[in-house]
Image 1 (cartoon, helix red, strand yellow):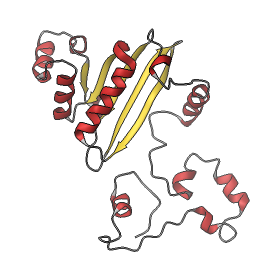
Image 2: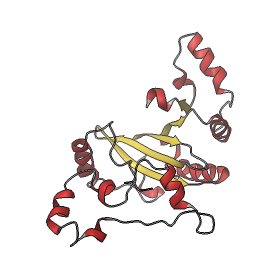
Image 3: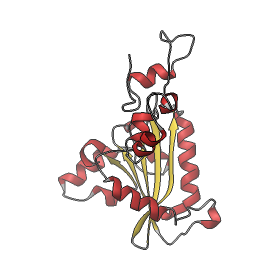
Length: 211
């Protein structure tokens, strides 16, 4: 089998992460440096590096840096603005006068667990925390999230969680002092045409529908 890296968590990454004791294959990882002076010149590589897909096509990086939601030019502008933004390192540096939210994509087993904290400042959304945790323990992640929430205090007004993991949502709601039977609350709000987001702080989101 041979391939440039595609999406993470696929067949190739699973084979890549297998133990030497159990893997059936001899694995060879050939990035562009193996071809320098042979099939590639320095000039060809310098030109190829101008492409957003260089890391995937030449440097064994899994797909994920380039998607179809944001244009690459917009990402570059955001990164330029972000270079002037210095996220707080400790509690004493936190600005408690900005509106903040947390986004959680719970992943256990083969998927990564993602956590992002953002704030609105000067009409811009600034990223304060952006972390991925691979093969995390359920209780370990509850502890990590609790530490992040303690760092920012009550300035995190809403916590948005992928609705595909109801067991994690229930435990997180209990930890936050909310009613764990959130499905009934959502059902009741929809029946009376109320916005359920006003009635809870830990909000389940259908990622496949609402992105």
